[in-house]
Length: 237
Image (cartoon, rainbow, N blue to C red; front, side):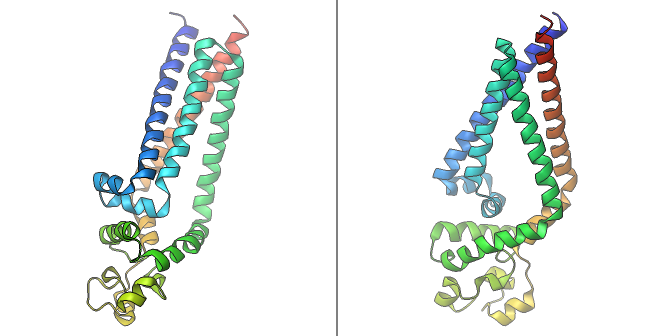
């Protein structure tokens, strides 16, 4: 088996795995969008915290669809020895690589901006839906219990909320279960918000996150290099 044929086979198998993985993520994304409660029940309370920061279903659907496209282009491009499909594969992976680098820079530099944007969207939902929407309330209760946090930023997220109007107190999680959870007790308890807790978890596991990110980047660079090798080698055939 020549070098070109070997790399071609590896390219096909690698992208077939990507295609199948994309299909699996797409399926999970559709499932989560239809039944988020089952997702939390199966994967545990920690998964609920993710549901608050990112809409997991749409995230998985988008990622799954992108992986399906990449896998299809790479697999078919190598199998059919199509320069057009290989160039499309290279371009898509390059765009994703650049977007990931840009997102990493933005995440590092503008973490506070992310908090501001989340506050603008999540805090109104907490005030309007916590205690009124059973599914929403259950997910937030799991999140606050697991991470030992209160609201997105702190107990003030529940000011003028449906829960406060109905019960006259803040959620018990905001007072470390000291009852009744009044504004005074909540302020004294000084329970941090869930957003800060998630950031702390990410920083604590920064080595793992960085390693995964570096591994993904290395795979993307390798995929682009292989696709370019096949693309250029076709001219010599």
